[in-house]
Image (cartoon, rainbow, N blue to C red; front, side, top):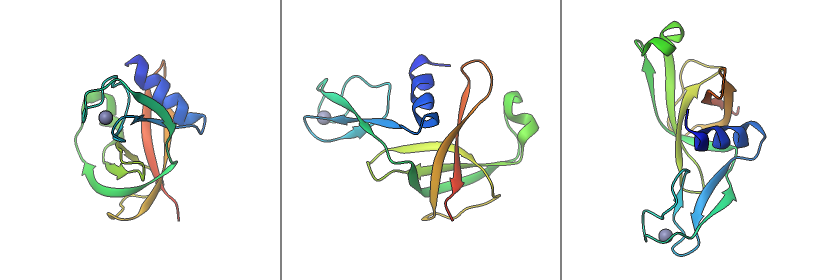
Length: 123
Ligand SMILES: [Zn+2]
């Protein structure tokens, strides 16, 4: 797993998720970018990311790569944060969720520096 992703996941695990904000144009991106995709400057600064996000899409996976084969079916959620970034993660605590619902982001450690992003409903 990529070192940046381990850092990113550990930030979520510690309750301090981060994203990168461009000091020049205000764009929001996720690691591991070093250059702003909008304006091309290297003025990305770490900022705190909310621990909740809004579901924009979800899909249930019935057959998967071998690593996740034991877990099918599972639901993958794309959720948008107020800060302007999106993350994809596995849904927990429920089998389905609708766009517009609020979810809390978390991570699960799956062995050596392997982390999985998860989302759970907040109500
Ligand atoms: Zn920029």
